[in-house]
Amino acid sequence: VQLQASGGGLVQPGGSLRLSCTASGLFSEYAIGWFRQAPGKEREGVSGISTSDGSIYYADSVKGRFTVSRDNAKNTLYLQMNNLRPEDTAVYYCAAAPRVILSEIRKPSAYDYWGQGTLVTVSS
Image 1 (cartoon, rainbow, N blue to C red):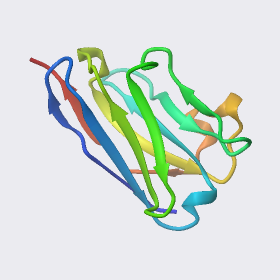
Image 2: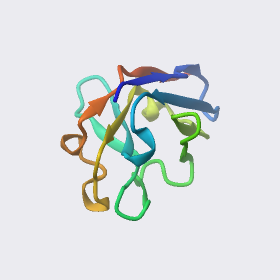
Image 3: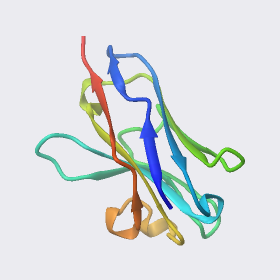
Image 4: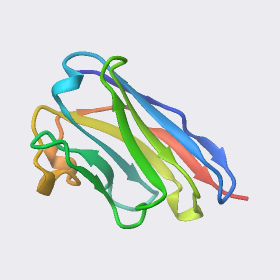
């Protein structure tokens, strides 16, 4: 599986962006996740969809503002980000794995395939 993330950019606080992650291979059967890494910080799980029952995970910091979705027909994963804050500034990565249970969904180590990252900057 190869992943290609896009959609990052510069946005003002309170603005919105939609990230996309296009995949090749057996994407529809895989668990997927969005992660982010700010300068000097560890990579953290933002959102994900598990394979066990399709449960969706959101980090507390993004609940109510971010929405993850997937279009299996287009082999594409999305992250709609609304009401962005300066602390959302980071490089965002998409990831995939054949099987990830919900309790592991936020852990980078659970994923086998990674996109190259797209930079999101929230600043006035």
